[in-house]
Length: 439
Image 1 (tube, one colour):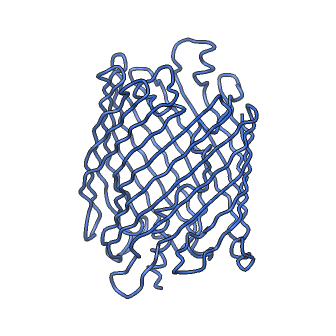
Image 2 (tube, helix red, strand yellow):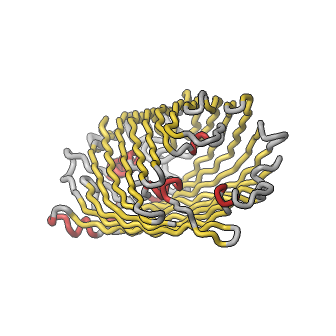
Image 3 (spheres, rainbow, N blue to C red):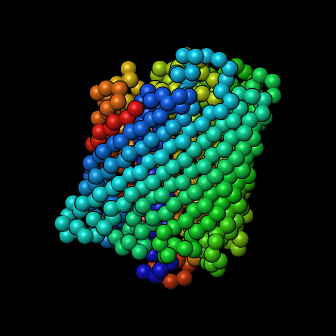
């Protein structure tokens, strides 16, 4: 297999990989945080989790390519967040709205891996790694006529290729920073934001130096609440994708233009709707095909236990709800210049008496990669599902279980010149039992 196709196996499979290193309570603060520890005018939320589980196909290999390697996995993840007082604590001493809302968080996840088959003990044990994440967001004058927001984060993810060879591991990091300004005239029925973000993507192995890139995005979004619980919304952006090394084949520099308009709000006290439709165009250098297509999102959400008051800005925060939706968008890619994804999904979350927490999510994605300078056009179908459930024995201790399934089927990646191909089909099960201590 040529080097180019080896690269295709790795970066093509990576499209399907979700944030396996990031547990649900790190991604969703509703699942992860307890009441917190008050420190003056701040809240501190420390925590630590331990999990042990099984991964049926750690390297996401196709059965037709190489042997499937399963692994047992131990994860230890300390985390901490610091923020200004939440609404619950501010309610104890009501007053004027805060001038600053601030939140910072950090986590480190140690992963120890043990081969399920002793024949692969060395290959699997060498995959032990640490994932890292740190970030902050600050909202200055959040309820004033004019406000400013700042954000930044860094994340390091250790991820294997389809080969146990550490020299081709897809270990990588991202660093992002952003600033925005929001105008809210009158009583807040209308607001408009302009923002700028810069994202730096780097790769730890020299094999992927050509993938190192910087993405700068100029964005804008607006909202007009023309009914008490319904808003007309707009968002648009222009992204500049620039690779730091010049390569005649891949990847290619380019720009991405997005624009969408739609509605967001409550139909009844229990039923919410989000609908967005727009257009996207890409402008990559020297590629056979650029994107010029409709994009959008539609979601219908039913709140099993709706909060006492709800508006379009808070609809996503309902604690117990079921949602079904569809998204269509285009993303920068390391295989072709870009890929288009159509996805249908189902989400379910349930919080019962502060004791039982359950979250189920799943979806089907159809991914279309156009013909590029080195690879032929191809299509992939992705299936993913995750179930997380936790029983909280007290306010600070939770026993949990996580089950995850991922599958990919579709066309193999083929080079334009030569007989080689790479099979990206795979199936992967993961199951974990864990305990958390959190405040």
